[in-house]
Image (cartoon, rainbow, N blue to C red; front, side, top):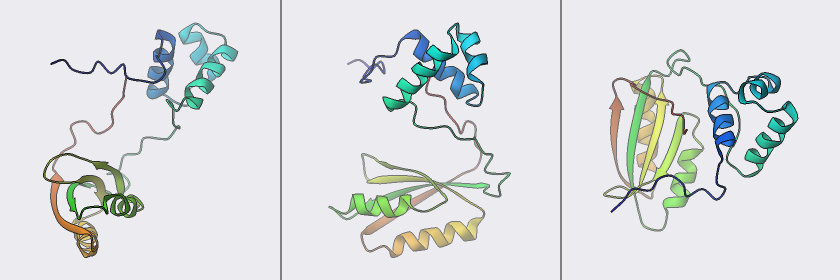
Length: 157
């Protein structure tokens, strides 16, 4: 049994695409001229390659990486949720609307979904959990609190 090598993309990325993505993951604010020089392309060709990556849905957007602790959100919670059959999509959609929710995933195993969220303190986490448990289709939750972030933001390539 082998592992997926990660080459299941609809568009096969070439070495230049990978260089562009790596550079933009490092600094998405870099000027086209500077990035083109670094990669060895003209600014016009680089612009077209970036637009193509955006149109293919490989680059989804550009956003600052914010230190959540500096913003007052020092508590990270991982919440596993069991949902009554047939209602998972609507429950996940409601949870995803919450501002402090970073991500929501369907998962396999004993639980149906997992939520990663940031909170200012125990009281705000407690309020969120009580709100979750009041949802009629949520059967059970288990919450883990992260003590330390070893690595929080990831680069794909």
